[in-house]
Length: 600
Image (cartoon, rainbow, N blue to C red; front, side, top):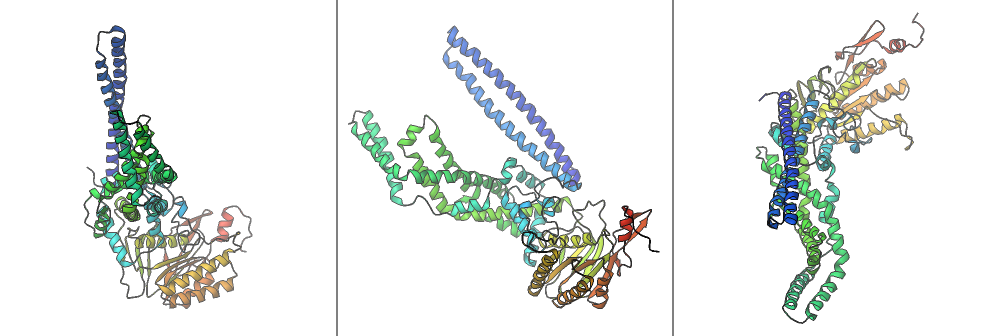
């Protein structure tokens, strides 16, 4: 067995492919045996009916064999489908490791929020997003939990708990494979958490003890009356009992139908949830967080999977009445009404636990997603958390962006703390300023949700995050880009008054004139420094770079530079000390063919 994640995935993928091929061959053989058994049955039927030289009981042999082969064939196909999903799971894992993942998986578009303080700015959701890279959840509740963790920095205790849980889950490749291949792909969107929790805790449509007792008594009475009539008793007895059944069933008919129709979808969704709970309950964990989540999947009536199974069996019993042979018996026994009362009793006893199951499964899946990332990127370390009693810090060595292929990413060192609190990042267009901000922001997001980071080392304080990298105007809201930026900056300042904050400002106030931009930036940064916030501001305006010198030592200047070689701009994307001293805008304009006058 290989030891590195890529080789392990390739080894397991190839093994699952061989299993798929073997199951396909077995299924083909059983299919041929079914066909042969069918023809044997036809031959025996002809010998029995036309020849008369065989007993009719011989037909039972091919019928029994055929039914057995159908069961075996279906089982083989189900196993093959599950192993095929395993192949796809490892293929996706290999693609993630090889940085070919951007077209795979859910991009999380439904979590997009332009008003969030940093989600859109840092590409947390959408095509090629951080969510798409991390997400391996098989249910909506898992995706929602992961999305919430991406958007909400956790506190120190929560981060530590998650890190420990991720370390515990990281080597459990088989567990993650089982979760990913548990059910068919359509189940990925099958469990709707809000609707399911609402159904489970809704007010009962059927309640009261006497109707249930009366229904049971009348069912038994009707059966007894029919048996007595069959033994020669008066024929009025079964007629009276049937009339009593109708008198009870008709008033409850609409409510009974409503209960069973409403339970059909949730029962299937809960069966999916129950299977996930069953897999998670089979594991033994060392992390206190995982142990607590595992314990939460057990009730006084048994494990969640067992409790959910009871509801599923009630739905199956209800479906019996659709059988043409059983329908008269079901009517005689008030079958549907009994099933409806049983469903309502199940909701009364276990409905309040459904939301807890959903929450725990969602956390398990989110932690599993982070563990998958940690396993597939063993060089990415967990960050160190700074003490909260001092000023906020962010210290990164060899920091890179996880969404940029490792082969092409350029790593940089960044340090923020008491001195400097703010870095003014100057440089020409396309030199790497905005990518640096995103690298810092994404690393902070990963660190504060309990995940490893793409860096040689990262030490930071638990902080709030605010960014202005993708501020846009809004025609519908009647807001210009500048006005939208000012609103966002106000929100970030408000946040900094409440808790330590990391801010990332791209081309600050570039929608206004140079004088107002410089004065506004100076005042804003003085306020944030006074509030002990830390962060970076990018600019290609050399006048704005002077603020770094004016606010020293709490602020400092760094820059990216470039070179022009044969009318082509070259960038090394390496961060350097001090402000940039020149611009490449004119050179870029000339490089694309614009006719501009020479400097002389």
